[in-house]
Image 1 (tube, rainbow, N blue to C red):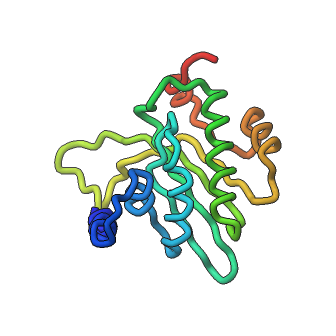
Image 2: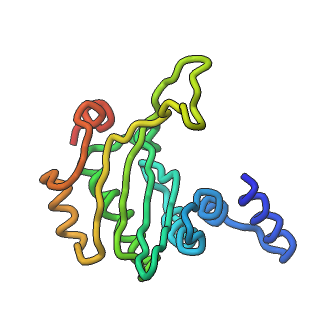
Length: 172
């Protein structure tokens, strides 16, 4: 929230109002390369997505840049079939690579909340998890969109929680 407030104040001082995409890109950016995460976020948040992107990460170590996209697996903005979900994954990853030409890899994961009881510790050394990962995929730059789409369709090297998928998607 502090990042978004600072961004808003900066735009007000120069006489321009930020777009929602700008605010989302800044407030949802993370990692040790916030400039790259923000740039990718600006690209992704300029379009509405049925499955909401909740975080964009960019980390650099040495000459290697890896992007992370976290997507919500609940409360889709519109009904979503499994095929449409796969198409959205391909498009998100393609746009992320386009927005970060030096990125070597995009890791995308989908999470859903876990209900925790009252008085359960959810931060610190004794923390109980509050989310569960239901989908993951790692994609290197050399994999093209057609290959990625085929891999998603086949399920090769993709983690998909079948129980979640059965309830998450509409019928194609």
